[in-house]
Image 1 (spheres, rainbow, N blue to C red):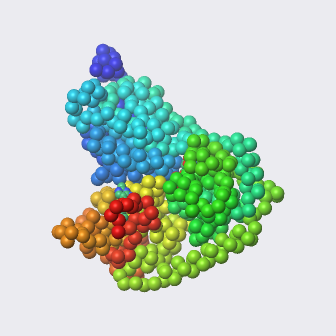
Image 2: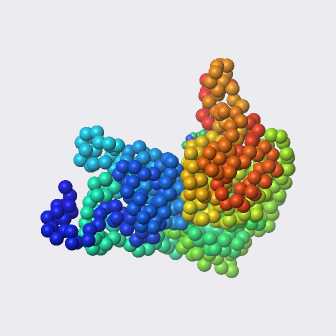
Image 3: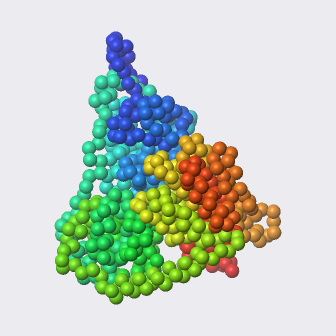
Amino acid sequence: MSAVLETAAATPAQDAVPMTDGFHLVIDALKHNDIDTIFGLVGIPITDLARLAQAQGMRFIGFRHEQNAGNAAAIAGYMTKQPGICLTVSAPGFLNGLAALANATVNCFPMILISGSSEREIVDLQQGDYEEMDQLNAAKPYAKAAYRINKAEDIGIGIARAIRAAVSGRPGGVYLDLPAQLLGQTLDAAHGKQSLVKVVDPVPRQLPAPDAVQRALDLLKGAKRPLILLGKGAAYAQADADIRAFVETTGIPYLPMSMAKGLLPDTHAQSASAARSFVLAEADVVVLIGARLNWLLAHGKGKTWGGPKQFIQIDISPTEIDSNVAIAAPVIGDIGSCVAALLAGIDGGFKQPGAEWTGAIAERKQKNLAKMAETLARNPAPMNFHSALRAIRDVLKTHPDINLVNEGANTLDYARSIIDQYQPRKRFDSGTWGIMGIGMGYAIGAAVTSGLPVVAIEGDSAFGFSGMELETICRYELPVTTIIFNNNGVYRGTDVNPTGGKDVAPTVFVKGARYDKMIEAFGGIGYHATTPAELAKALTEAIASGKPALINAVIDEAAGTESGRLTNLNPQSKATKK
Ligand code: ADP
Ligand code: TZD
């Protein structure tokens, strides 16, 4: 029995003293920090926690699988700079949520995974409790921080610690372990109230050192072919006005990473997206703002990056610097403060890049855009990725505030380059891991957080990872339109089993599947589209309805490329590859 209970039991006037318990204190502590939504899935020991959250005016969004609840929490964190909360049961529920926690940490999204856990004394002696697992230690390698709260009076401080760990510095996933017996512990209410902690300044500004700013400015002033690279850290930072001012004042061409699209509208004259390979290879000084030189940027070296170049890197994490290549001018601090400091240092002595550089980029852009326009204008039957995406692009142009979720291989690669974004933090995709399965979780998280419509453009394989959440979308009547690019398989649907045996090839699905019927089972609206015109009509109607909808867009099953644009990452068999 805990100390709290012993004291309470020994107090003769116990009935007269208003009491609280672990359940109430968890909810009180979250609400005290302005957290109003929990994404989760109930069961022992946290069902009553979810009930209480709802009873106390919080929103509890219940999912069909914890990974999707975790993804919803993570994207809510990315959109708001406040940790998204995911609540799960012990062992298996926790493990399902852990995949999302790891994904959040890898992507630098703030979230807190709160899981109930079994009795410590049984778990630690491995005596076989219900859903027994050493969750705290299992979470540690995949989280930015992991904590357990053992005493009810520590709930306030424990939640404060989790919030601060998730959002300060480089954001990430935090695990918070709540043993079942903690939730039942009682405490006198006054003492409980006093134990709550309101986190002051959870995302403290971190100002860059003046000499680091000067070093960066000196390098930038000497550049002939400068380039700005905006990553999702820049979008996350919510320093939109200063970033735009920095880009426009310097006149430097910029490239957005996929989730930074829309930080400036993709139609901006300085966007070099349509000349991506050219600018990466030719630039001499590159300013990285909240973007890591990981695999998505070919590690900052090799053929992609062409000739020698120097990097200025703005990041909150000092150890990100020199992670892949030498960084000539690191600027460490929060992006808002760093960009403001650079902007303040851009004076009359700064010359915008010359026409030789901007003209060469414009020429490439024009050439590539003309080529793309030609490809997009074709109308093959059946539809291919391009003609379908053209139809979607034209509809979404009239909805600049739409939230876009996107995953798949070809579906991801083509949509990223064809669909323009007009506003910041409106594109949510496979991210740093190139992961499948974020689709419905991100869509629900984005719809709940923004209150605005969501369109999820999904490969048929990608959709399958979270497809059961269509029921969740229908249950909460969320304005989510899911478009399935149905080409009968992973990447495409044409592979054959070389043995001629009964099993289909590893990449092949049921042919002609009607995903639109799935959503109808839950009361949503299903559409079946086989031409760009049908697709455009369905999408227009679906968005206008504000109701849950799914469009089964039939794509030529031979249209996809294996692994999309990542073909080069597939290992080659030296012995047998033909
Ligand atoms: P992308 O995939 O778009 O290239 P990454 O996720 O690789 O972007 O990089 C995001 C970077 O932004 C991380 O290195 C992270 O430390 C950094 N970051 C995130 N938030 C901030 C912030 N508020 N201020 C400064 N850096 C930040
Ligand atoms: N599992 C997880 C969690 N993430 C992954 N990235 C994969 C498996 C491997 N994978 C890809 O990298 S893309 C993809 C898988 C299974 C699906 C591609 O097929 P699709 O899209 O139908 O979603 P396209 O547009 O038809 O290529």
